Image (cartoon, rainbow, N blue to C red; front, side, top):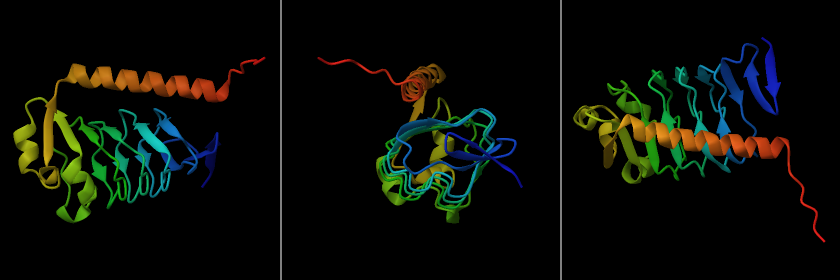
Length: 182
């Protein structure tokens, strides 16, 4: 099996699986559009990472994929995701907002423990307008104490702003601007 390394981030050779993001990655990360699978423990202990932009064709978030991402505050999960691995977001205790784009709640096993209890009791799970009743009855999703609906245009605004900020950060990291001081 061959791998691809782009700026310290490891992918399979076709860049459809993200294998490893360096633990020192700060602030935000945009997962490339080619990625369909977030691999086992691929974001493990990225303690400085606050936001992750997931591609719209992502299908799988594997076991312990985001374990230990203690600074992760917001997550937008695209409708294409159909698999959540066991404890995918273990120790992501700073999560405040989780947006699910699924018009029908994704089916998950009750034993899956995707999110820790500290997240389901404090974070807000945002679901598409008109789906709150379904989520309030569905495995795992019903465990969220704070469940709210969002309009699609609200999510698009939030996502656009998030991607703009991430893009600006990436440009600044690749092409730092140095200021001369007297």
